Image 1 (tube, rainbow, N blue to C red):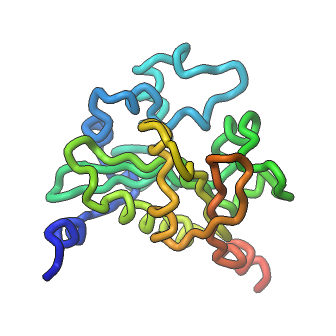
Image 2 (image 1 turned 180 degrees about the vertical axis):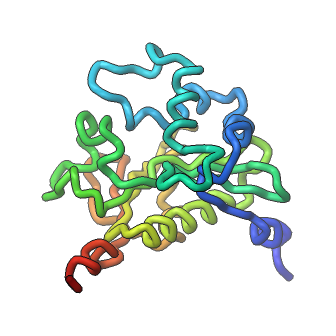
Length: 215
């Protein structure tokens, strides 16, 4: 007999965030601590801070990056999940160079790796957030799988994530867990610190490379 949660999650509808309304993202975040970040931690430029930008500024940046309400837009910064038309989850997935803070400050993704930080064909999943009241149902796993598919369909050669293996605080779990990314097909490729690992799935040459090879 199928688990009721499995049946429920099968009804999860996932769309690019530019197909969602701004109020949907506001609903997902609510008043929890995640609303004080709005997926800007890895996007901070030099000398910027979350506190200095402020809650409304962070919200405005996030909505601008997602392109909410503009389904004809050419890009977005993530996906939104709906359960029975109720907005319940968000996942951030973009080309890795779109995270200037991560490229400039954080050593974890790069320690011991011969990586071109600016390679736009490598995408990164940096946030998996499920709305309060909808957690523990497998929604994050479905969102991670959708993020992988979205990256592949948009020409990525690979997708990465940077979860914590153990002892994660509540806010640290918002980057996703190893189990969640494993279910989406990513594998551990590096462990640059005691708690953090790099997980990755290589698709092969990007769509752009394939087109260039034909010309």
